[in-house]
Image (spheres, helix red, strand yellow):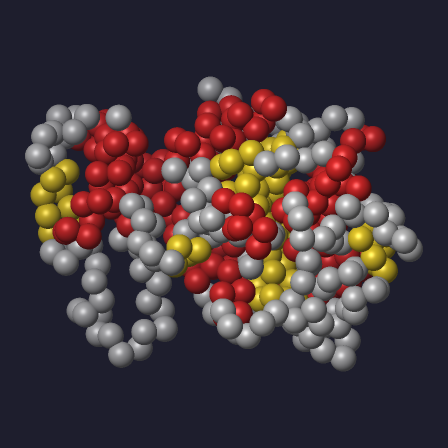
Length: 411
């Protein structure tokens, strides 16, 4: 089927990438398989080479043309059109995640979201003052140590029935994470440019959905901050008041992603009254200990949504493994001085982090399905994979697109 064709395409590219042209005609592929094969070639052929100034255009490896034999060319082209829009969304996310942190800071990342307007997405950008007015004490606490002001971007795609509640996707966008005053060790800290991969995936997914004109209402929200140590930085022990009114004792300033998500999720739920929410974040080192770089952690309050996400992950190769929530993990967040602490200690660190986020899903408003994807181990690849060259993976873009296509799009 299409998955096999996609795998074959991903495997074939290293063999043909050095060639300028190639013909694939081992057997003529049915239309859907031909389109999947073409998608895989594009995904695997990605390269972030903006800063390689010494390479001439001729030296840069690129795939100029691959001819795929298929009995029904028109059907293959029709099948490829939406896949091409998905590839564009994947590339947008990979570009964002690959950019260095001096180039891609919150305001610059918000500007890149504006490119979605030409696809028909409405894009709103909120800055420091608007976020202060909204009472985003948790997000602003993270950004206060940086000279770079924070942003929240709200992206709306209205491809569904008018007035129908949207699906909401929320992304953590820490454009660089030093850890703040709870500073990280120097070795490998350059990787923290990809601490905005959750936001990158949401932006890429909005691009994919709008690009293929998905018949669904979808809203994407991203909280963009830089976490820096400075004379103005948040201190361990500070207490902040979130947009929900709940107070948080900040024990560790490097557990900042959950503080950003707390305010954005609360805002997104109350403003848009969505039918479900999925947040994506490079949230914890603990999930890498648990699952390595093979699968992302899935936390969910709803078995149906969890099953839908797991199936979408299996279909796209962006695999999810369900992890536990529950009272025992939630109790780890008890604070002596505030409503909660922002960390629950090392044991079960990924689950207590998910429980922290869940406290900002407002069940008083009525039941809402919510899922949290901890993509810390899957956002960046240290070796080539079938359809992902080494580097930014854009994990989540195809998963979210598939979730919408399978379950939340009007037929």
